[in-house]
Length: 409
Image 1: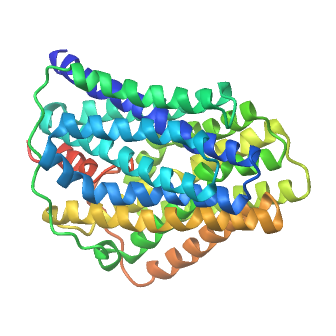
Image 2: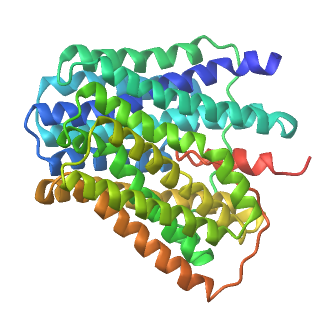
């Protein structure tokens, strides 16, 4: 109980950080549509977010060492608030893209502070329990963010001011905590292509995960508007994807630990193909309505969101313990490559061919992944040595937590 109390500030900050960051992307998409941005331009905003997130994951540890955890988090929360407030000042897609880079950078910094603090305060005996609790707060914050979107009027000062207030609120728990900030570990040597050399299938699967998840997260609101959903319906649409991904994590872990990882990856990818093609075809044929859209995106989230963790687990099967942090950094880089590219591509395809094109594009990605998985199965025999873990793609310190959860007692 004492540990829970001492870490409660961190968990509340995670919740508020996710509410603020999770609501800004959909709000930008809805606001951009209201102001006449094209689908490609809205995709650019999503790509800009992931550029900032990626840069922040590698630069922010140095900033924390220089200024300390609390000061760095205060700077990041302030930057997030400033970025949100400045959106209505100048409605321009490139200005907004710059603000989204700033926001992504700040969010990465916030997660780096929280996760490194959490990792340092836990011990092997309680690390697994509290990391699971961390994941719950992260997921709940994501779902709450969609509820916030449902209540906001896109493009208004009030909407962006509310998000700025949430960003400021995320600072308060850490500012008031009496918990002593930890020392950051020294950074490990960065090998960007390490995951691809260690497990090519895992590396390609991570890229596919970045391509898929960034599309639904950043351009999903455009799809929802194109098929006739309201702002409230769009928020529910996005929340259903997250809910599907959250509910499947435990079954996905049980299946991944019991069967050949590659069979599991092929199974989830095949489900993603089927759901994506059906959803895309329904949109093209004007057969989508509110309830079918909610049901299909729920299934879509369940099929696609575990893929990152399945691939990360598969890559860990081939890694030595000393290489796990390097592997985590490499996986994050590969995910970021897909996440940066895909929103622009998805927006461009919607602009050219209609809403259904986004899901056809995602289905094609997973078709390639299935074929590549089958080919790799004929080259390397399967091994199974590590346990499945749901891996949030937030900062490089998450892998240190996971590594210590499975470490020696």
